[in-house]
Image (cartoon, rainbow, N blue to C red; front, side, top):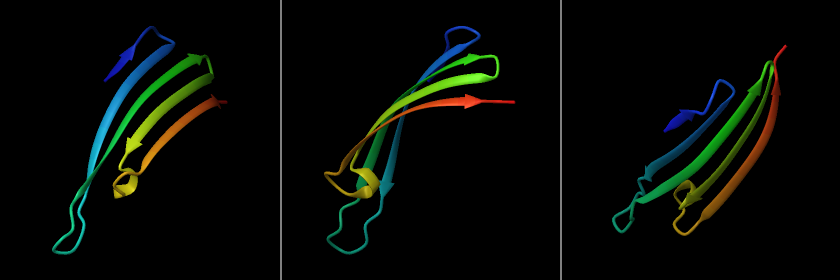
Length: 77
């Protein structure tokens, strides 16, 4: 879901589920779930972007959790 607050700022929320198929008779499939929130602000040729995300059962490994935060500045010429 994305929302443009005004001409310069936008925010979005996303969720994604990925199922990892495990091989073998006793194997149990694992579903990775990722939730993220993003924001960006643009001023002419410059954009400031931020994202925060959390993943559970990361890369199909049960019980493995991961958090990611990123802040970037993009300049276009």
